Amino acid sequence: MSTQTTDEDSEATGQSDSEAPASSPGERRRAEKRERQTEKARQAAETESDEETVLLKVFRYDPEVEGKREPRFDDFHVPFYKGMTVLDALIYARDTYDSSLTFRHSCRQAICGSDALFINGRQRLGCKTQLSDLDEPVRIEPLPHQDVVKDLVVDMEHFYDQMESVEPYFDPDELPSDDMAEQRQSRENREKIKMSTRCIWCGACMSSCNIAAGDNQYLGPAAINKAYRFAMDEREGDERKEKRMEIMEQEHGVWRCQTQFSCTEVCPKDIPLTEHIQELKREAVKSNLKFW
Ligand code: SF4
Ligand code: FES
Image (cartoon, rainbow, N blue to C red; front, side, top):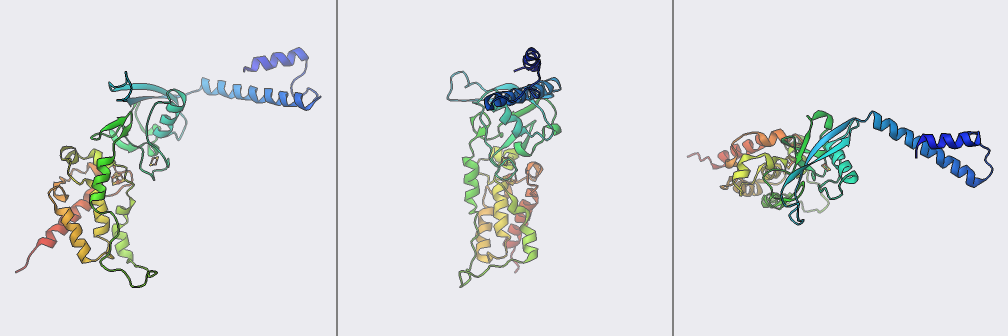
């Protein structure tokens, strides 16, 4: 609907919509509708004329659809607005141009960890990455070193297996006799493990790690960080800590880390992963020292 049509209608009657007498409720509704449409058309024309767009180059692949089995990049021109994230742009592209474009997302606030992507050559969360911080065209790919299921969705099974293998749950040597009793932690100890508790299981660190890429059995930074979170928790006790250190000292545990810091660099929650891995290495050495 264009503004011209409405103006012509008004000229024909010699009255503007606002001036027209509201002879019946039906006419009033129609007049209001015309006004709303005119306003919408004016806003759309304004947006079109000053529209700034961003070019996305998005990885596409679908093993189940003939003609999409060959990986390729599709271009999407997305209208840009201040504060727009990569995830917002992907949602716009999917909802406007191609409903088969597939990617994971949920919370849209860096909490669920489901939209870790490889954006302009680096692992990032789509919902935490501002388009204004990126060079164009914005290249969006699935996380490297993981099998692609479809488009931007990767198979996280191996990552979850590694996380599970370090027994990622609180398991103290002794429980208080009273079920309702608190298991208190000192302020200092809480401070020590604070950062390690922030992991959102996004898998960005694992995807960035060269060692994990070459050694499928390597526990990886996220799982080791999870082990750190519990091994350093003073409430678990020495016996449990010893068992946790055994897992850490295995062939594909902490000693595989070559302190490249790539995990620390990409972690969207700023967890000092390399530092935690190094600390577990020191703990492993200390626990094996014998004084005699
Ligand atoms: S440690 Fe950081 S990068 Fe790795 S899974 Fe957790 S939040 Fe993601
Ligand atoms: S959508 Fe949940 S972390 Fe990005």
